[in-house]
View 1 (cartoon, one colour):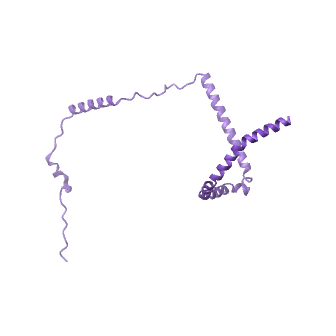
View 2 (cartoon, rainbow, N blue to C red; view 1 turned 45 degrees about the vertical axis):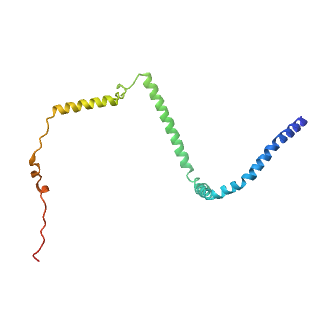
Length: 162
């Protein structure tokens, strides 16, 4: 058994050797690009580090230990509320299907939409009916005189008495 394990290990190591050399050569070729990318991304790295430090501050100062009881209370209240709501939902659904209690109003289906051709035909009919039924309006020539002060020019006088 040990000889078989040693033989398998030797075969796998000889099979892996070309891939390891290829990965090593690729790492050597790409290392300058990786270093340049890390240098360019350094401000973002520091920003991420600062944000993580700010977010983890309550855990380092152990501020959450003081409100642990409140978290437990609110969590259990939320679980009880959700479970009660689910129970009521399923109970009402079961009772309404068992007793055949449904809305008496049929569902409101959307009315059939008119096509553009039907809309244009209806508009032409309305215009034709409107032109026939309404008499032409008579323009009065005295409308300019009725405007009052809007049609008159305002003339200001200078104070020449001084």
